[in-house]
Length: 300
Image 1 (cartoon, rainbow, N blue to C red):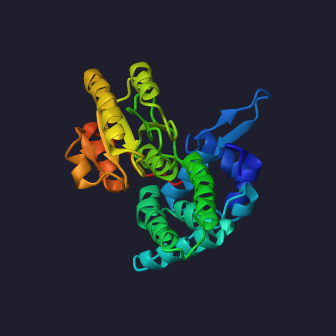
Image 2 (cartoon, one colour):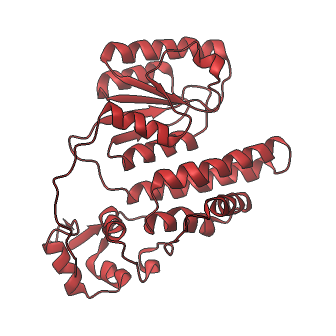
């Protein structure tokens, strides 16, 4: 679905409950509500998804909201799901890709788990097969574009960050066109409660310095998937790091092109070789404020 909110009628139909029950949940504050100019209730899709996930509920009719069926998993099928993800991506099966990514999230799997354990390994395997001539360039590029579309939808499912949440920005430098890693890190940080925003790929160093000065984030991330010139990258990166250091901004780096030798010639706050490491550093940098204890409330 493309809309970011739904009517109470569609939400009730999707959950398999009466519209009166759903409105009561809204009145009790169990579901976030926005009002149209005409005064009608609309439910943000992110709030509805979190309501379902937090309470372990089923979406009885996900097709009403344009959503895939929830995809339940067992503790033993991580490799099966990774292989299924790779097969769907390689074959251009967008509906199956959506079911694996969005359906798993709807069923309660964390976004960082989906990305770290299924999506990233699937693309490593696809990249290896492409490098060995086992799949065509168009198949690899099609897989990336298809996955990015589903990740943008996954991002819309995440709850909004608190107004006082720390801010993070990131992307890739000039010459690096790979959008998938920076998109995945944005989602992982958003899931961890940050105001995180990827600024995209191929960014000139100067404009990232301007962004640091204007936004003053707590964290800058840099994804490095490919390098045209190590010497030029190190020169550009040194300028960027110096600007971040001057402003007291932590710098998180990662990516397949950051070899141990290259990292030895760089300064940075942290290096993450997967999303969990990146999220762990972000949480250590700005520990989340614990919620006040509250008794669980039955929505019925």
